[in-house]
Figure 1 (cartoon, helix red, strand yellow):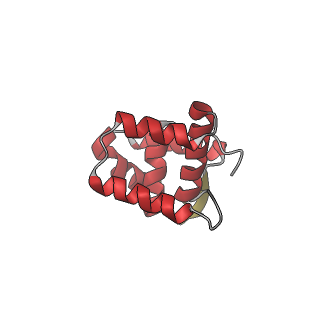
Figure 2 (cartoon, rainbow, N blue to C red):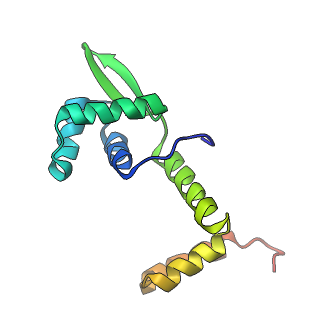
Length: 128
């Protein structure tokens, strides 16, 4: 997924719905997005077509109705977005990113323990 396109916040919202209910027709997708966005199904269809043209979603026809499903898993998209963010904002370095977020956001005791576990799990024997 090295060449995957960037997704806007709106596109992420639609992809999250697709990851939960795909394959699904436009009306079903619109009903899941509509409570928060109040979009007309035509707006959802337009957004899905943009995602289709970007290669982010697939189309299939079932009973003469187009159904949409994600072309990439949530994990693939999250990995790409996170790596892209770290590269663009922190020049590819994780330490400044972690330092930034620990300084600007209050970490709960649970968050601190989770970070410590993650860091200790990545330690390899023989490393300094």
